[in-house]
Structure formats: C-alpha cells, structure tokens
Length: 153
Image 1 (tube, helix red, strand yellow):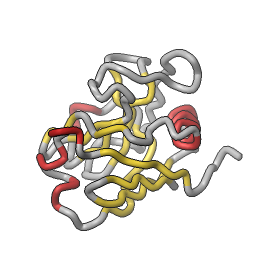
Image 2: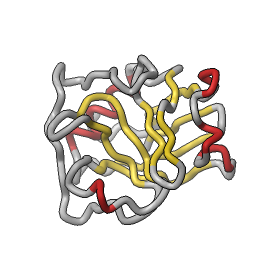
Image 3: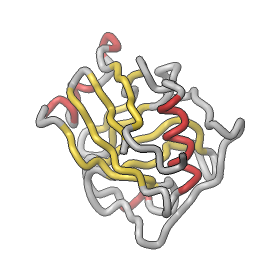
C-alpha cells in the first residue's frame, strides 16, 4: 500500500506484487528513497489518465531502480477496463522507468502496452484530483509519497 499525499488530496494505492513484481519493487523502492517527493503530475488528460513520476516535471525524465528500463509485465487478468488502475508509463515496449499513471476511465487501447501494477483504492473526494485543475499550472500539484507496506521486505 502506498499513500500519495497531493496538494489536491490523498490517494491510496494498492499494489499487485504477484502480478507485476518488477514494477511494484521499482515503485516501492522509489517511494522509500523519496524519489517522487516534490514532483508534479505533469500530464492530465480528462477522462483518460493522470501521469506523474518524472523528477524533471517534463514527461521525458526518470529512471528505474534497476539502472536501465525494465521489461513489461502483462498479466492475462489485468486489463484497462475501469477507472483507478495504476500502471507504468513508457515510450514503447520494455521502456519502464519511474513514470506511472492512473486511469480516469476505461482505456482498452492501453492493454498489452503498459504494465498494470495496482489500483487506486481511496481518493479524497476532491473533484480537482481527476479533472483539469490538476494540470501543472504554476507547478502547484506537488506530492509526498509514503510506502505504508513493503511487500518485498
């Protein structure tokens, strides 16, 4: 379990370490190293995704804990069939680093392109968390990340 404490409210994420062990280990380790602290959600597409995890805030930065991009982990039961799924952002096959996103609706076009590694299980009832108000206007959407449970320790 991971808590994202954003300026727009809290988001709790449940991780699926059995289905996506490399992605979960990467995410947890980056959280514990405070890698994501004081970064922004740099990309918001209403009704589609909210993306973050880039320390440069541009969408072109970030690295994995493995020192290089890691391979995709697709699981037959995990599909982009609903809101609230958490997945690795990438620029192509097997190009996973530190960036991640969560879905704001069904996104079938992302199946077998992005590793799903968790789900949002709680989000403050703040409409700005899922709407265009989260766009990084004046870089206002910073967040702190807390690993509440490390399934790898």
